[in-house]
Each structure stands twice: as structure tokens, then as C-alpha cells.
Image 1: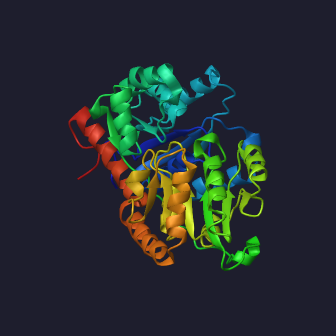
Image 2 (image 1 turned 90 degrees about the vertical axis):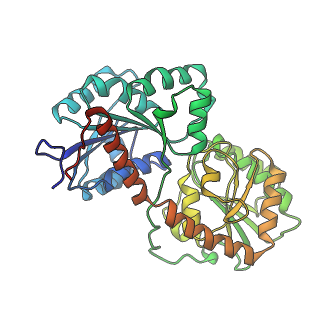
Length: 393
């Protein structure tokens, strides 16, 4: 069995805000923890924003059960506030007691605390994983990224080339401190039951555009709704399905009513049958103002859907413009409507793009490829610090 030369498996702790959430960062953190080889790693996942009440929620409970099935120990920190020092003390004691070898944190808050507490607990390797870098945090965020996270962590992982470029150019992180590792996803599960368009009150010959995600300002779904208004005259059978929940729902409902799009645009809320739902789409849309490497786009590609997206963050790493989809500038309903119109009117082109997108997803953006890259990163960091390999030959 491979170990670290001390007769035991490597002890790996994943630090993240929560589990069982819809966010891509939480999903990637879980998948990485689950898929690290159990022959090499003892794996713990610590969710800092966890309480027994949260665990009782079905989606959260199912996530914890899934971790357990894969041999991952779950720890809930029960943090009540950012400066809950008792919770952070428990984390330090846990890392010392368990002799953690690798601390891998995800997203800004967890990255910051990993940078502060990992070295304090004597953890040899500390990794900060940034999933959607944005300059919206202002000067304080840039200062913390450069002066604390990048300085005290061994490496910062960026999920897109654009995020890495901006961290270096705008935050002045050293190029050698930031590595690009794209997200990956597992194959979509087969739908438990077939979902027909008629189950969604759709006609079989409707042209269906779909998008899946949290309803928040970042996703700029108002731009998609306005684009739908521009397309109504050209495509009377157009239907737009928006899947997800979030704080923007009421504003979107108001906009849909204001534009008279009640028949065209539907808010479906949270769904547990997304793989089946994707099969009812003709094409998928991402209208976001900023992104890292959105897992939903990878899921669209795996489902064989052409993707029309804004040219933001890591999206150009995923969607090859004119080959697997079309890219437009953010915040422009007319440009989005133009790209959608181009594909809505060409069934054969949509099919060809969908096939190429699925092939690209499977060859370049598979979760097992991501895990292999992460493992190699751990090895490179340890070799650089110790001058020897962590793994047995």
C-alpha cells in the first residue's frame, strides 16, 4: 500500500462551508474527497457552516450519507459566526489530533481560515481552491488573497485560465503561486424515469431553451428573459425553462409579467430530476456576468446540448465558439437573442454542436482527470518542500 513513508495513509482534510448545497464549489469539494484513492488517503470532510438542524434537511442528510458510503468521515464544525473562535479552536485541535497531512480548502472564506489555521496546526501541505474569482470583493479581498492566502498556503488553485490571469495581473500574486486546474464532472446518472415534454406542459414541437442554476444576480437571468422577449415574434413556439431557486425569483417573476412572457418563460424551481430534464432541452444557456468553470455547462455538454453562453471567466475554456456553442458578451440581451436565433433556426447545427460538446467534455473535463491532477499537485508540493517523494515508488 502506498503511504507517506511513515507506515500510514495520508490524512486529508477537505474544508468547505457546507455540503448538500447547489453550488458548484461544494459539489467539486465533495467529489474530490470521495474520489481520492482510499488505498492512499484517510479522508475527512469538514463543513464549517453546519448544525444538527441543517443535517436534518433531506438534501444535506443525503450528502453526508453519500460521503460515508465512499469512506469519507464527515465533521460538522457548528460555526455560528465568522469570528466563532471556539469552533476554529476545535478545527485546530482536530487537525493536530488527526495529524492531517493535507488541508485542501474551497472558496474564499475557507481558504482564508485554512491559511491562518493550517500552518498553526502544523499541516505540511495547505491548498486554497478558488472556484469563481471576482474583483467584486474590493481592496480588502485583494489584500487578503495576496497577503494571507497566497503567502501562507502552498498553492492557490484557479479553475479557469482567466481567473489565474486576473489573480496575477490584478492581485499581484506570483505566477508560481497559482495553478490552473479545470473542474470536471462524473457522467450524468441515467434518469430514474423518462420525462416527456408533455409532463412539463410542453408541445413536442416547441423550441425549448433551458438553464439550471441558483437564481442570483451573478447569473443575469434578467438578460435571458429580455432576450426571450426579443425572440417571441420570430419563434412563436419558443419556451424558456429556468431551473433553480434563489433570491432573484421575485424580481424575475415581476419582469416576466411586465414583458407579458408568462407563456414563454417558466420558473421551475428546484428539481431533483435534472438529468432527465436536460433531455427536454433543444439548447442550453448561461447568461452569467461572471463564472469560474461552471459545472452546469459541463452537464449541458455531457447531455449533448449546444451551449449559448456569455464570454466570461472559464467559459471559453469549455465552450469552443462556433464548434460546441456560441459565445456573446455579457449584459447584452440583443446579442444573446441573436446567438439563440442562429441556433434555434438550425436543427442540424445544434445536433452537430451537441455531439462535439459531449466528446470534448468526456476527453478534457472528467472528474477523474481532475482528481489525478490534484494528486500530482500534492506530490509536487511535497517534493518541493522535502526534496523527496511522498508516495512509494
